[in-house]
Amino acid sequence: GSGGRLSDESHSDDSTIVSNAGGTASDQVPKLRYDADANGWERVLLIDDVYGNMYQWVNSNVDYRTSVRKIHRSSVVLVPLNEGLVPPTAQGDGGDVVLEHSEIASTIEKNIDDKLNWLRSKLDQKSNNPVRVSVRREGLLIEAMFEILPLSREDLRRQWLFKVDGETVSACRFFALASAELFSPELGMWTSDSSGFYTINPLSASADCNGCDHLLYFRFSGLMFAKMILSEEKMTYRLHAQMLRHLLGWPVASYDPDQMAIEGDEIEWLRERVYCQYESQLEQLLLGFTEIIDECYLIPFSHKELELMLIDGRGGAVISREPGITQSMMDEAMAGAKEYVKSLDDEVNWLSVEVDPSELSRLVSLRSWPVQPGSRGPLPSRGVRMDGRIGNKWRTCQVISGPTAMDDTIHVHFDGTEDRHDVSLTIEDFSTGRVCPLYTRKGRCAGLTEFTVYFRGADQSKSAYLFGHPFQVQCRTEWSLARATASILRMSIEHFSLHHFNTRGSGSTFLKTDLALTKALSESLAMALLDVDNSNLRLKLSYPSMNRRQIIPEAIQKQLEMLPFEIRVVRSNAPLGTGPKEAEANFPCELSRTVGNYFTPQMAIALHWRDDRDFEE
Image 1 (tube, rainbow, N blue to C red):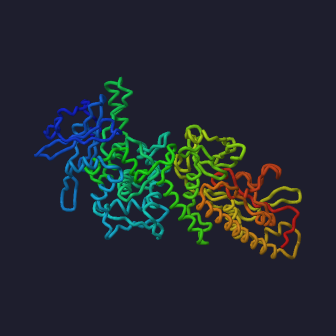
Image 2: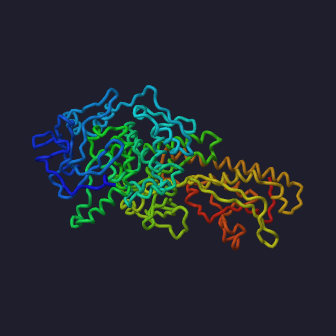
Image 3: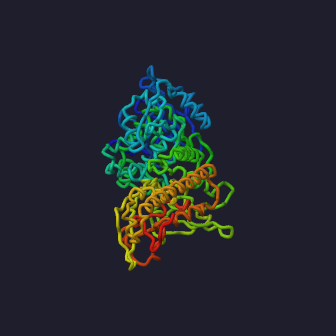
């Protein structure tokens, strides 16, 4: 559209500036000067008694074309600097509120904490009659959008209280869940570059939006970003600098300074590439953001400070420069991990796929990260989950062996891949960004792993056959293989019948006893495995970075051998097996290996009845 096109004017110096309103500024007019991160950008106040005072961007050091976004009523356009004027006024309860230049100038000089206190004092979130947002965990983002988008400006600025599946959750937890869905690759609204910075996905209009207009997601994004700032919450998804500049109304280059030689129509082409490819999405993002925080209240902030408000919350120190572990990330993961471990006290939830353990895995990954200031180790131990790069793609992976006292090398296996993708890592791989803490580069996956379980026996000639009815098992991706074993045993109890024991052809009078004992032992083993796994999870929460070997007690291992069947891993397209018994592996009942890391889509499980063995009490 024409709003996305820039005039051929390059910039105005700060000696004389003429606005469309007719105001004139000279060297003596009031200015707003920012810190060194502003790269010479300043704002001057244009005095106009007719149209009102306006702030305009100037920079005497810039010799390439720049522009700025301008919010005009219910639309956003990209304009030259001399048209992108911002009045120091905001909408108040009793009419317009005018900010004095001296107040804005003094606020710019404050540190980030004091600036945030100033902003929140201007936009006080009324705690009386709070807005209550109640959603289900399944479909959280959609339901939250339909509850929040219709709110009035006054209600948007009120305190929000959240319930998920009928239970009260903190604002920190709600925003973490909402942002995880909003930035998920599956939704396709946002996309990240190779450095992990997010920008609007130009192809979002063609994404599957669950039956909603894709622009609603960006309107909601703007509201959520603004509300998080006022609520002192933060997210782990880092926005690209260009997105931050647009949110604040800072100038953006029409093209890169390194491409100064480009002339004529090629510049117009670059303009289209920079802005118009996601013009409508950006418009909704900005309208949502400024519906809560008026433009004039954004004037004192730089885009670097906006990043701190959204990522670091109150500008906390970065624990590691690469990949940018912050205290806020730690706090968010800890909050989610506590919720999960608390759910373990409810026996009904022990094998519920509705309870998500991913934040606990993320907490362990963050706490185990070796790249701390002034330190080079130790490397993560077996079981730690992380994001790793295969070529140009990021995938989740897990440490499967190492390090040892003699060798710091660790070996990782990438989720859902064959062994050929396994790699060995050293400390240098952690400091150069080849691997990063869990869910900092790769978005959260769907969270569920599903596989089929078959009943299988062998006749006297050792030929395998299937009997009974196969069943499906769903496990959380971050569950341990020990917990998955408990789930397999629990579900198999519902499918056992006398036929499973008749196949052994012994003519025993204890067939019904065998069935009862098998069910009892399976139930007992499932409970024992869950107890061990729950104890291990609680220990992880208390000591996330503790380096220790996680093993199943020998007594449980011996009871597993008493079962009349073995739990074997087979190919999903060949449950009868493709070769001798030795070619198959027994399902590893481990505490440190996760379901998502072990399973591939080609795997299934066979409960293979043992040969020539009586089952004795």
